[in-house]
Image 1 (cartoon, rainbow, N blue to C red):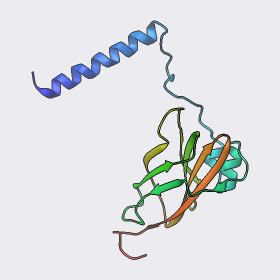
Image 2: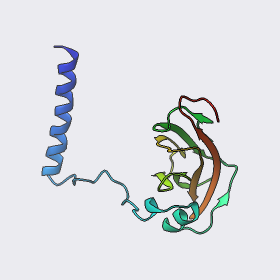
Image 3: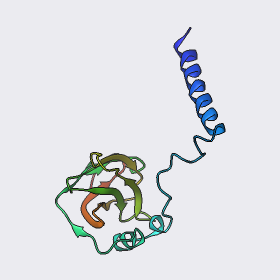
Image 4: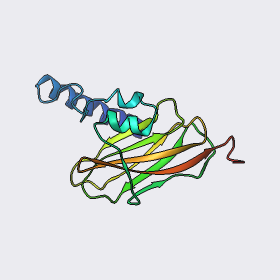
Length: 156
């Protein structure tokens, strides 16, 4: 049996198990989503408005949050980011791009006992400040980094 056919059969077997679980009432459609989408937060235009829409007050700058990304992005369509938090009891990590039409680009809930870091890619239309926003013990903390977006990675 060739490997392509084997992968297809394995994939359809997984779908069959999921279908049986739904039919038995053990799994609801959409149950994989942990939290509801905060539409208001994803429509904001500033850091302060985003924090307010997420239910927080003014965020405090912190050196315990690390943003790892290129200083100059060759392609603004797929800019990679890794954000790590050294703040105890981190509950969520969000990525905000100041000059995007909506500032909030991504938000991740961090379950208890999980190492607080995320790795994602976002679209950036132009050179901008990028904020990593961390919620820990109900308070918000942030750090910022400028990322330059250039055509072909040249210039500044």
